[in-house]
Image: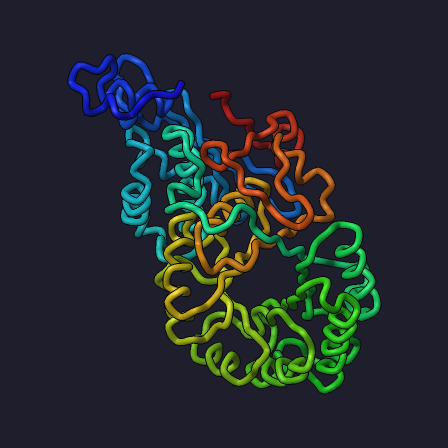
Length: 412
């Protein structure tokens, strides 16, 4: 119901500020007031997707429920259960305070990095969905508004013959022409037939030539119809990574992802600065405190945080803010269900330096069935104007696709 907000300044107006706030923001009842809400429960259900997606729901005494997702990992549901006493009874609108509260309470279990941060991320995303519903605004509005109405999606591609350059080129063309994507990614840590000892991380000359041929065939096939990135999954030594990056400099490579192991920042910086091939890193770093070091040392050309792993929506926004100070774009890594994919897109809409959000499930024909709304269309995600994340779980599909032994969420 629309109202004239000038009546807020009228002492004789029919509605007081408290009444108007409660009514228009969708939280009514005896206690009144939009902030008079408490968390009553937190529940998880794990979905058997191409990865085990941990969906998280936060319940309130106002009857409003928020849905989030934590990056897959052993022990994440158990950690979320451990955190429940720290958020039950709290106000779900205090997202920053609750995030810091969980970090402090879980510090003994490693809230600097790892699965504890991932578990906190799942709750944090659910709080954004919940707060958006309570305040009747899309999640991007909680992050400061939006720069764009839709976010570009890049499709992580695979073939049955991943080591065959022509097969990769064929799949690239199919995904562009039939599925409508103009941004792709292929793996380069695939067998070439020249390997002798993969444990030493060294690329022999034939391996470099083979990987460069994959890059050549794919980029030449799609030409200007698509940007193409290539993923190495932290596989190579510094010297081998440099040789590979140099070997593909003549091709239109969007980025080369994770060419060396993630632990040694100095080596990462060395590789990045040794080549004009753009280097992307970030999915194996946690929170802005770790991602910041990559950015400030300019050890990365494009930063790739994984939102339901790195700390959630506001933490990803903080990472993007630091990156923007160094004119570094953000391409969010994402292997999630539609829930965290949309959370990534909401952040992508709210930051100036967003390149794209990854989609890793194009071979999973029921991925989109998990929610009632359309998420990806023609290689983009249109940002919904519905409150929160703007998605509704299809509980029948959730129940059908649950990991064996899991329990379905309670109804709101």
